[in-house]
Image (cartoon, rainbow, N blue to C red):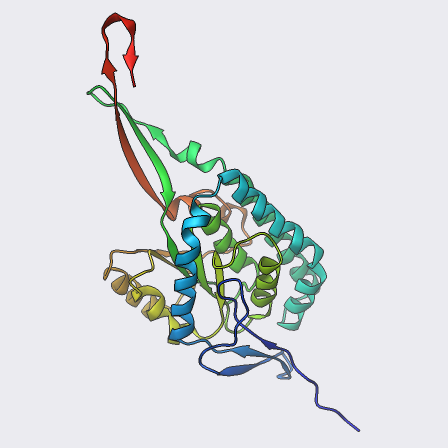
Length: 293
């Protein structure tokens, strides 16, 4: 007798947990032969709102961690991915990649996490400054995390595109909500499983699945989101995101890049999601004896 294969139903990742979508909707994912390979959650506005609450709750603790500790945690995620390389490769092949391109993508994703883990305790020194002023003050400009970042990941680069935007975001002390690829979502949920079993606190990264045309407006007009990153090429969605972002003066970035290229791995992506804080510190002169700070 032939049997009906029991397909895995992939959940979403919010607040360190794997809840079912609030919408109760799913869509069948098929391979190149149009055969069903999984059921994927079709997230709604309510799922996104829950993810924003989780990200905001996690922001205080994550942004206040020592930069070196954030680097350790990103490196731990890379270690965990290394142990599951074969699973990521097989999922990419299921979604249409060749074995060679799948192996390349997984290796680059792991290496990208290692790269940004090394920048966690260095970017402040690179981008911070001591500014010359005419008065008796020290004047410092230091980058600080923007806050909660809503991100729409690449549609085509299902794993590397996801990792390449999450890593610089959380390396800089931000928390995020990410909409994964709609046509190639398998690796995103597996990556969430890696995060859940590593040292990343719940709520720092939240991963949703579903369609951009249903969710992108909510990503850009939510009042408790501080920045939006959009990595697709839909011109209408870009215009609407830019308009919605003005509602609470959130920053909007359009990172539609070829993530395979080495030049798209750089600390300026960390800087994009930072706010520059300038501090004036008075110097009290006490005669020839020097200065009192």
